[in-house]
Length: 621
Image (tube, rainbow, N blue to C red; front, side, top):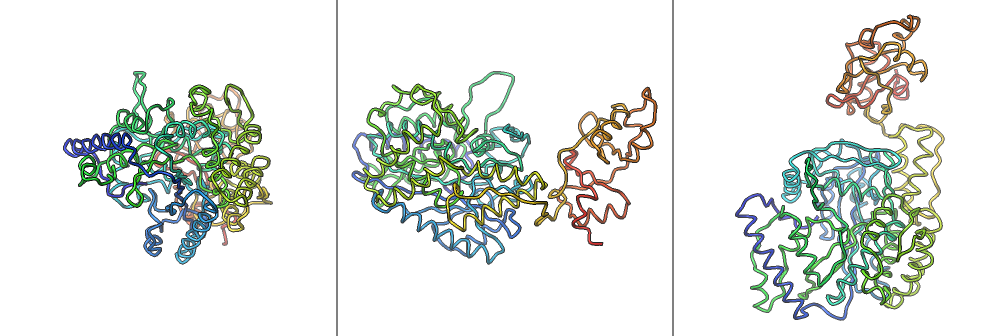
């Protein structure tokens, strides 16, 4: 999440001082580029692993602060939510067995985290979106304490001047309003870093953009959010909307989203990319910077460009330019930010090797991508890949081609050559690209999740299916064989595993009637659908009453010209519960009041209903 000392840029003085440093950084960067003051003759790779913490019931565990303190390891750091952590891996020279070394370090650090997590009744999990996360874990009490996180939330809300509205449509639809940036915390990724020569930076960056769609399509692993089946890589849409600072109005305005793929091919140097971002995006974070970059250059020192790096960290390009200093020498990197965490560490390392091989194996003819592809086709490929994953059709170099064919015939061989030419051990190349080859012909993480989830939903409630799916992901990860070899789940019946609250067992797809509708309509719907309880709402969608099977029996013999409305026959004194109500408490309420159901409300909104049938597995007398 970047610089933890950042604060809000919410005063004229703070903004002005920070912007002066920003402009000084740009000029210093241009001077360094002119003088070629960057590390030469070496290419390094690095990575950041975001992961989830779950409790023994496979739900989010908010013990990151305790676990992080006990880890006492500088490789680990916090993330936006209290149920996520991040590992920063050591940079390695891109040669020999570097991918095996990185895989070994990552597995060792994940194992270390898991051992400590288990001491605190938690487990670690790498997955793009945690299936069991619910809206309850997205309130501000779950944000990680710290100046940066609070400032990020407050400044994005200030710029929006309204709550965040999330609306995504896939096989299912999700529409919800939220009051913080914490929906972004649903996303966990495996971020890749590749050092790039300044002289080849723009060509490399444009190529990274061109291959983003095909690479993403093969690596999708986030099809579910809050029990809804959405995009193959739902993180792409979710991140855009959860960090969107734009405002809407009756005027038609072009506004840049802070989460962006880009809108054009890049030209000139990396400084031009940074200039575009300064011109297009307001400064929302600042920090007290002690050393001026130009002054540092004049003293013969390598500046850290702190202002550029902080501003860059508040703009979420899927391929992000990065400036860094390693052992006193400046370098440039491309950070690949669109790949999800998981499904296994082996899958992640295969993704890294595949992407790196493509970057290093770029044919010379593609140095000028603008001559071969319209940028809008490249952007469209990225969105298609996020939506439909491996089933996508890409518009590639002027032709429409199935992604599987593009991967098999052109990109996989290109990555193989690129890795070998870079001096990567042939054994590692074959091992990692075999994982990619199997995934092309079998299942991606997204496909495995969707097929497994659909099978389980045939006999399970949503919460049961999500719990079983999360448990299976964890168990398969520990076996450490790639997702293409995972058997699709088939479950024989409901388990109600770890259900404790009403929200875990309630029915959410309801037949609801308006209080002003004819009573005959309600009676017929209940009979057609064989339902014993029907909530009644007013014209604003708020719960106003309840119809039961008894109402239907009493009134079904009425003549068809009966003028009564639902409001005339409904029960108005309705006992309700909230999603967080304990199941045993709900049972006691139904027993005490001798009722067969409880509507579930969140504020004024009806969100579900729980019946005696739903709680029967928990009723022990």
